[in-house]
Amino acid sequence: MAEKPFNELTPAEVERLSMLAEEAGEIVQAVGKILRHGYGSCHPVTKVHNGCALGEEIEDFFRIAGHLKACGDVDFAETVFDNGLGKKAKYMHHLYDETGCD
Ligand SMILES: [Mg+2]
Image (cartoon, rainbow, N blue to C red; front, side, top):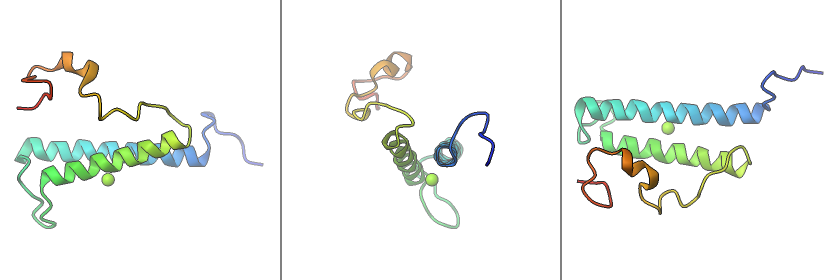
């Protein structure tokens, strides 16, 4: 019988967390490319625009996050996109209107 891991995570929980971390890393990478080259720049080989790449990675992240929620690993409000910036608004330097966009 296999020894129980110190963190008591099941192999499935480890896989889900690994996938979440991977997607979070891909978001960081996509943001870095936008900061260096802009939203409109694109990958020289794939021709995918940086803004599109970021959107895809955000979607990937929320798909995995939703799976963690469905599996009971974590809980968060499903209305996260419906409530605007919420408590994050007070930390923004460039908040032009209720959308936070310029
Ligand atoms: Mg991805």
